[in-house]
Image (tube, rainbow over all chains, first blue to last red; front, side, top):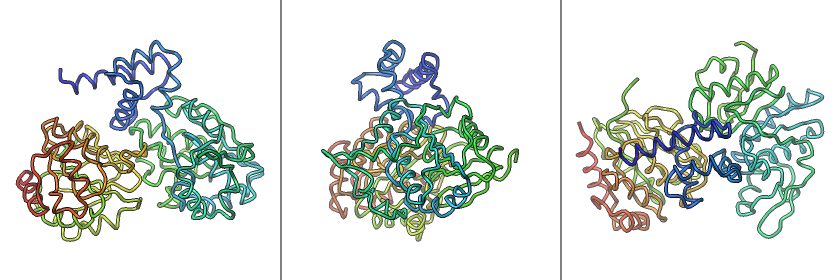
Length: 277
Length: 191
């Protein structure tokens, strides 16, 4: 058996171990990226091979949060693709404004950069007070980070410019305190955010949303899982609700996609037409 | 299910890369029997106009890489800015927003390493002009798997650092100026 085939077998066993021992299903993740993350885990733990990692998964209860954190959706940026946020403000906020209570689901929120970005724009549009944002991720570690609202200020210049390009009306620095190379987001921004663990690969519908943001998550999934998640989104949205994907993502050719109409291609913004499609 | 192309050429380029890629791609011949995946360090997430520019004068179609699309022989795919481009075993393209590698996204190392995994010895890696060391480790992986590692002659490159790093870290099966690089690729991949 070649080294490559041996490693394939190990990765297969790792996926089964994660599933059977902890209930995390990575079997429908795009293999190339998943393998890179596994290799990064080996480097992080100074392990020689994937079998050593399986040992950790099976026997070291304390490491599983860290392992899932490193295998799941990566860190984002504030106002990534600012034009998308400008489109949301222009195309979606007027619809949101027509509801007395607004529900937004940010699926795969990672460390929360986009949750806070959205909260800022909603505040400036006068909508935040009646909004609840459900920010979910499969990783408890990512959620802890997101709740904390502390980020490195390394890319702050880019973020500040992104904020303005997204249509921000003040300056980004109004929303955080900077200290020791980090920024801490204003706690008021998370007062209407519910951070919760939710796994797109296995968990069910839990809210009725007017807007779902799920950017740069579907690119990590293989078609069957993309199809599942598209169905989840359809079933979670109110009629006329919006779905925003990453700028390089589109809804696949699935039955569950048919209920959606494209609103803006550049922003990958869709709207739910009718149930059952 | 269509078979994936028999060979894959992966190219990494940074500063000076647009001009270098135009020269290289326009010298390829129609009937080129391999797929080509390109990482050019750019911050522009919309590379469709760049793909158009590179496609001008190139006998092969040059497209922006789309996640999930199948590689086709005789077609060149350009990674969008701010996304890593990867090759899946089944010959599909994949994108990721995982962390930068060598301070860049897309990274040639990420493309090259996934290419080796999918194509093994049928991978041809090409490192062109640039100012950092991206692509060197990836090229080493390609050569270790029995694939071909080609590097632009640093003296021919607008920025020599990236080819130099590749030669230092990975070594090379050939170090050539652009016209000779294109000729070598044609020789390897013409049916």
